[in-house]
Image (cartoon, rainbow, N blue to C red; front, side, top):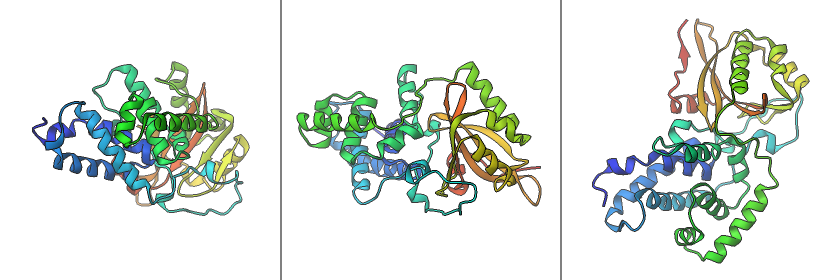
Length: 316
């Protein structure tokens, strides 16, 4: 039997990743993990050791997430909520709780797993995959994640969800059929040398604000979105027009690399009136081959930057 809270905390990253996939929010995942750890601590005397401690915690976390999802709508990305927009459309915002949020890789992928498992876990926190999960009913979502990501048997899932094996298999069939209709993007374990070079060119072009060079790095039908705004754009022409027009305040920005939701990401800092740079957005890029297919700038820096260990200002 675990002897201390420290032994529970060793599994925080694994449980955080699971809660993030279920809930689509780094903030909500943190809250769910806290509740999971509290329930586990209070119930340590009931842990009989028949399963691993990590498996037991995932069972608790799954039920915490199902409780949380009982009275809330799914989180989405702008590209899934409405039709493609234009640079002249008004900016309409939705509350933070409406949107899918990124999660720091370091918080959601445990360091103590082998490379193959780590690759699966990173791929399963990608924005496209987590966005697709939000279209599944919560119990289907749980069944799919426990089997296809964590590798549980149908019997283990049935015990965790207090249901039958046939019910689990039926839920899995429906969940997989739904995901087959969604665009899950390109799954990858590591960046190729060509993709790494692409990111270097992206940073260089952004920091000198060479819009022609930036759009040349985009897939022909790449998308740009900026939660909390509903507006999203598609294609070189629209994205380039935005960057040269209403987005021109990004000129002079600095980018700091990070890793978010299993994808390359950058903290963007715009020039501050008082000197130096101030936080503007967390950019998450999704790649297809040697081009950028999706560019999402999450503008809720006060919520996200502290979670990524990023400062809100950079000195001159």
